[in-house]
Picture 1 (cartoon, rainbow, N blue to C red):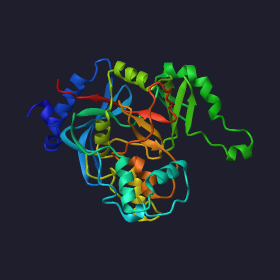
Picture 2 (picture 1 turned 45 degrees about the vertical axis):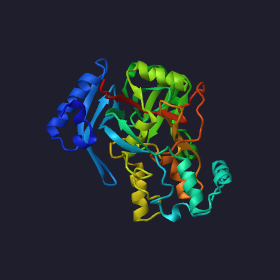
Picture 3 (picture 1 turned 30 degrees about the vertical axis):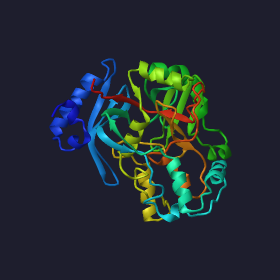
Picture 4 (picture 1 turned 120 degrees about the horizontal axis):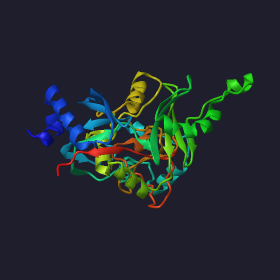
Length: 350
């Protein structure tokens, strides 16, 4: 078994831990630019809804990446409509008549099983078999047009990361974290979930750690983003690669299973937990439907829309094979508040 065969998922599963480590060392040695700083290599096991993968996670220039084994015969896409989904996920009345819902209801009616089958199939990519190369994939998507700087701790006021790059924006950020002096204002004070100053900085609040992930920002289009990623010796995922690293090529519409009930009971809480946890490859995907994730093509993944109260309609954008109807204009300036992208290093056999 040669190096590339070892990175095929069906073979990777049966390798010893020692052989896997040898393969990972070769990946880092021959496929990661020597100008990049690699650290904190960890052997991990990830699992989601019965699909497991033992692999490696590492930091490249301070950002976490995961080694995803390849699959020469990955089945991607969807043409099974609502198959496998409980009728209750779609046979409900909308609580909120959003613009998106009304538009789709006009086009698809959304009354019968057949209506919903057509809607789901036309909202997902076509069924196909493709060869997927192994790759190092960014664990979490980055806001578009940004470069990661580090983390700012709200409690201690300390910054960890690229200090020289942080200093020019420090004074602009400080007023945003000042607690009001009056008791009334103090009680209602909340730090923003996102910070953004065009061509300057972008920040994401991490509630669990009381920190902001901070980035520098430079406005860009899809075309300029692709060039920037290439210049950094990375790849943008293709639609095929994105769908594979999201759902593992499983024959389920959603990576966590086909359960969508998030009620306030044990099963509902389990569904909520599975939706938000890392997937079988250790990758994390947005679940709030507040924007799109880019691929190297014009096809957008995920979506930006408001809940209607119909589970299948609301969560369909989280499906592994979902393809947004949003048209991406080539010269449109992309905002980090709405668009993100995921860097990768594709391990190609030349």
